[in-house]
Image 1 (cartoon, rainbow, N blue to C red):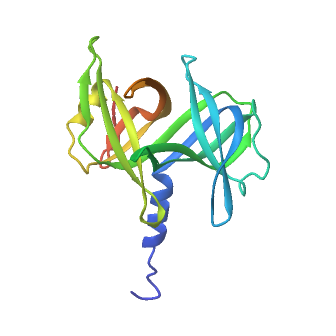
Image 2: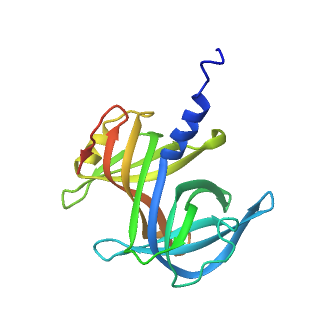
Length: 221
C-alpha cells in the first residue's frame, strides 16, 4: 500500500460499529440515581427512565451513564432525552449467568418533548428463532441478535417479532445478518422458584421493521 492510497479500513469499521447500535430515548426519571460500578477510576451510575408508548403503557428502562458525561446526578421526575446504545452483559446469580440489558448513555440532556423510544440495530442471529402462534392466532417469534461492539466485544440483544415479521425471521438460518428497527420494552413476569414465585422484569426489543443486510426495504408487520 502506497502513501497515495491510505487505508480507511479501521475508520470504516469504527463507523459501522457506531451505526449498528443506535437508540433515542425520552422520558421521566423514576426513583433515585444509584452508583453502579467504576472502570479504571471512572464512576458509572444507574437510574430508571419511564417512557410511555402511544397506547399509554409505560416502559420503565434501566439507563447507565458515566459521571464524566454528566457530573450532576439525575433527579427523580426530571425529563430527559438520551442518545446511546443498548448494551448487555452476563451477571452471576445463584451460580447461573443471567443476561442483563441497559441503555448506555452517550449524550443526555433535559427536554420538554414528548416521550420517544426508538432504536436501530445491525446484528447476526445467534440461534434459531422460536416461533409460535397465540390462541388468538397472532404470530410471534423470539430471537437473539449479536451486535458487534469495539475491541472485539458483542452485545446480545433479545428481540421479539410480530405478524409476518415473525414468520420471516423464523425462516432464517443462524448467522444471518439483519437490520432491525423497534423500541426497547419492559415486561413483568412471574418466575416459579422452589417454594415461591418471584416477580421479575424482562427487557427486549419489540421489532417493527426487519430486513436482510442486502435488502433496501424490510418486511413490515
